[in-house]
Length: 596
Image (cartoon, rainbow, N blue to C red; front, side):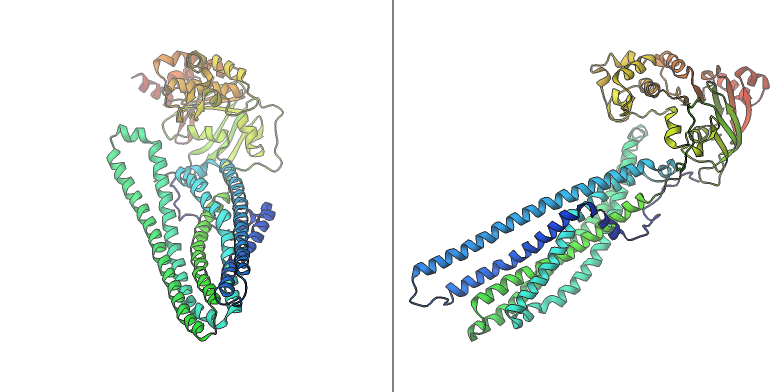
């Protein structure tokens, strides 16, 4: 049975109206959006006016608009006037389109910036339980791909939807005003286009949903396997992992192909409908021209309008599909934003004047899943400045105790007190700012050594960084590097040895000067070259601090003030190294096994 089964795409569904919530992000930008809508009306009016200008010119100058005796100069001036108006319309269209584009892009980028920042800030606030259950690749997809899909909605789709609706209504109205009979003939293909649009929307929605799910699966697979590439290469599983990636990549490829195929079929069909409508108008219009009931200019205007009448219908269908895609992405984003942290700060927190480091567990019961208890009725007291070690077999509950002290999880029963105050009555910042934790697997961030020690803290100066590094012996190797404390650190600090990474983590902990020090197998992977440096650094770190250690190597904890032996979630023995050896219990057996 998996302790933390990962959640799939289908585990959680958004409850609420995603469209309404998406529109709420527009409130700070209402002035810009109103300006965009006004520009849309102006652009639509200008686009409708262009064919009318040309049609009038045809009627006036080609179809007998002037009497035979009128001067050529007057005709020429009339042509220049019409051309000037046309150029002016084009210039206005350019200006309006440019201003609208800039407004939309700026608004879209600001909204996406706000949403992405809000999303990452919320992710940081979530409890460790969430990260135990959720694949990293899925979270990355939410912050990148899904947010970008929503950006498309704000930067393009909303205003274009409005524009196309206005354009369709405007075209229909002008055509009816010019000639009702010709207009009705132009609308013959509209029912067929409406049916095709409904079919396209259904097919495209399904295609979008499948492609987004497959994309998340690929991102999750990549995130996991790139992080574990060393293990893959150690066990020579490159071919197997490549085959697995080909399967997922192939599924994503097929999903994108289906998505493309839907659009590739729909667009030509709409074009055929517009061509059919144009043919009908040409036949009917030609008869009207011959009969003298329709002018050349009117026929030209109708042909131009028909050409553009089906374009917004086609665009509208595609934009509705993109809207559906954006809404689907928004639902995933809002589902993540609505994820409630299991660990919450109290409304009225209690804060000791100064945390001295007294830790007490009172009859603590704890289970990660709420059912299978890892800790069972655990009670102990650690006085300020004491050095206490926890030992026991794997799964005994040692690391769970460390997680509970930092309140990364909450207990089901019992109490945990720091300096007499229940951790539930303190804020997470109060607790964690008082705790420095050094783990077996040291995580270094991409950047430089200096930034990895200070972790962007403004209270830690460069001098503090150097002093902390020197006190824990990290300065011995850092100051020999070409760039010293500005030496670049690659992802996870892969260019440093395990001992060097551990010394940097010691410097980081010392720089924050915690009252409570937690060492979780901090010396498990140390090479012999830096072991002496590590031991000296540990003595510096532990001086004057409450220290809690978890170690499998019993030789590293012999000088602890108290050793607590855990077995199947319970405390079985407690005492100094010599006292536990004299008891001839679990600790003595563990010690003899390691000696053997």
